[in-house]
Length: 586
Image (cartoon, rainbow, N blue to C red; front, side, top):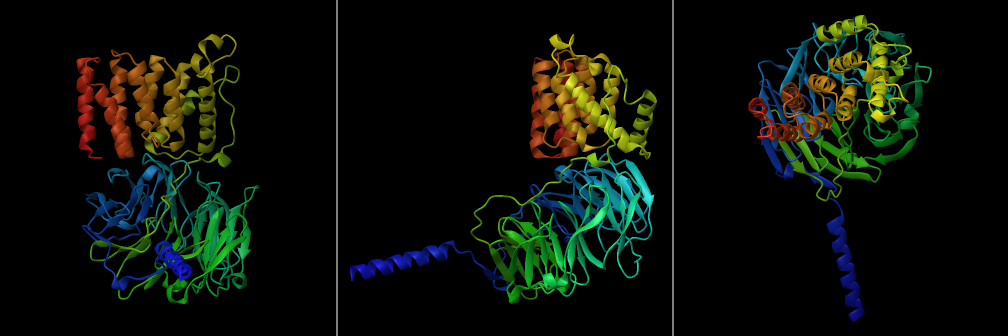
């Protein structure tokens, strides 16, 4: 009897343990109350974009807002213009919108408008991020490239584009633009250089109905039910890297395709019956998941998707599911729910943007143990495959960039004039940046052994730094921050500090950290010009980046300059600048 009681007790405890640890796989949210509801000033008019702090969205009534996964509104702003129904997350949480139909507009992570550029045509679709901070937008017959400073880099005309398919990006940074005109009934496209110009024309093997950029090229879905990857070869030409046929996918029409993380891609059959996880580089199927019949989402009923830490989320009009390598993590159903957009969060919420000015979330997954975020920030590796390569300036070959070229490039960056030889310029700037860093790493005692071109030619060194700052690209911020820590020359330090404020982009706070070091340990308390430049550049960076952490770093720099160790004039200037930062309400 005792043994039987012990056994029953053991079975009961095991069952209890299982009931506590197993997730709530299925929820009918028609019978549930929302976990939280956020009321907005207007209904959301475009898919919310993911950011490091949560989400951002544009709303009716000329509004934009930022909110967390739990529905807390972090900021909201009204503007004197209307938004197009699209928004793109740029580098370091910057937001890129389309306003008044033909303007591309940049906002900082707190929703402060930084600049607005008139493209001269109606913009179609969402802006596209480049690999060095540049932004691409397109119209029906146009493509434009704009720098992170809001200056035109180039603009070109094209044949009429198929605006139902997005502009995609290959791994080398070139763009895939689909054309409306077919070739013998098959989709055709053009590959466009990030520095302007058509590189080649592409004719696909069928009719493309979906396209998405991924870590290995461009994923494509075709109307016959197949899916594959278009990539750029080592020879620099586009080619079909792999194809999964409609027979292999058991798909009779264009399947849904999604880019995952860590080289993974997802394909969902047109019937919604099966999810395939594939290695995006090779097309090899890693695993497949059978979706339960009651929550299958046919391609024709697709309403939204998102990548979460629990797997891929896919929603239809009346149901949704989330699945990964361990199968379906959860599923949900509902009836008569009116919504504009839907997404799932890492913390297990199924979230709806409704036309009645609300965001409503239902807690589906109760036991989300992992705190890992599925958010993938925009990366800026640059366009090295397009740089022709250049030698560094030295005492033998002389200056890599002549004075006349310097004036031409500075005028082009400032006024937005296109540069035909921009890859060559960037190649030389990158080479000189590396050479400069090396020169300033040489100890003074070693200068008799190692020549130091950049130390011996300060005017040229400053010209290179000016070009880096004026380029409006993200790839030079680290170099300017590094140089501020390596030099002690007052003239060069002033140039670096001013250029830190001109470049503005400071992803990890390295520019602010370098200026903090200068103020506390290097600059003379009587160096009024440099100290005031620190104030100006701190304000510019804080305003542009719009992040609370950098805001606090900026406050710390300016507060330190309010101490009696500095002159009254410096105190006053720092206090005035601090007031301007506080007015930003970051």
